[in-house]
Length: 179
Image 1: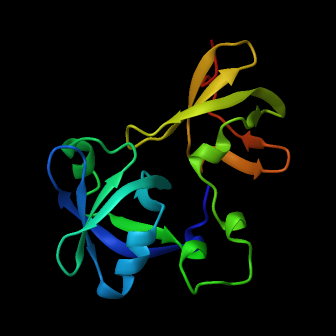
Image 2 (image 1 turned 90 degrees about the vertical axis):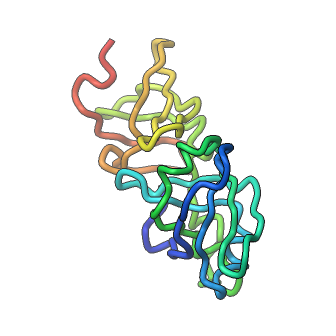
């Protein structure tokens, strides 16, 4: 997941625009180019900074953009973002180079696919996908016995992520992986 200090508040989601999930975003003129050029934006949902891939951006007036985000495909889904802050990853902003490799700053849900989940010191399965269709993002886990389980992608459960070993150490609530 991404650290809060790696993000910068850039805009505020306004209201849905139409019925296909497009949403208007109020942007300060100084931040307009950053939001227009973003490939991912972040939204705080249930205590997590959830990344959304930007599918389309179009201007609407001097301080408003219309965004289409992956996974937001209806006016009701877009309405859940109304009033929330749109965050951008600092490392991707032009002129914001702190000398670190930009790739080391960001980590997205797509990056977790194929990682092995370790719980209680033992491998419990591999992440095959994720479900971000609701406010509570879920990791889809193929357990070592071949069955499937859903795990909340919550910072509360994640102890560490080892990108070299492609593992995620988690402390999961008792019974979450019970058959």
